[in-house]
Image 1 (spheres, rainbow, N blue to C red):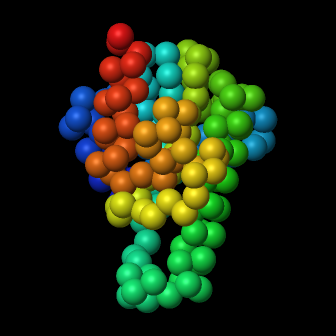
Image 2 (tube, rainbow, N blue to C red):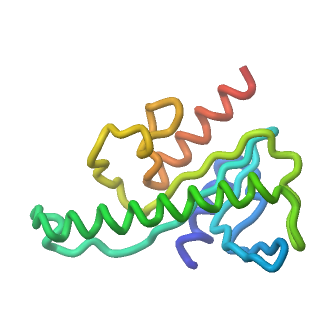
Length: 152
C-alpha cells in the first residue's frame, strides 16, 4: 500500500489528477480494489501497483525465477484488465462514479524497469511506445504523452 501512495504522490507532483487511490469500489454486491486512478480530460487511467523485491537469482538470469516473475506480472496485467472491464460495465457504483470516462486504460506500475518478454500486443499500450508494465518514471512519461495527445 505504501507504493500505491508513493506512486499517487508522484503523479500528483507531476500535475496529474489522481481521482482515486487505494480504494475498494462496490457495485451490485461486487467489489474491486483500485490502486491508483488518474483522470486526463475524459480518459481514465487505472494503475495496478506491484511492489515486490527482485530476488538475486533474477538479476543473474535464473530461468525459473524469470518465468515466475513473468507469471506474476501476467497475473497483475490480468487483474488490471479485469478491473478495466468491471468499470467499463459499471461506470457508476455504490461509492464511485466514472460516468464521465469516455476511454478507460489500464496498466501495471512497478518500482523497477521490468523486462518485457514479448512483442505480443497484450503487453503494450495502444501507442506501442510504452509497455503495459511500467516503472514509475515510465508511467509518468506515458501519462505526459497521453496528456499531450489529448490536448493536441
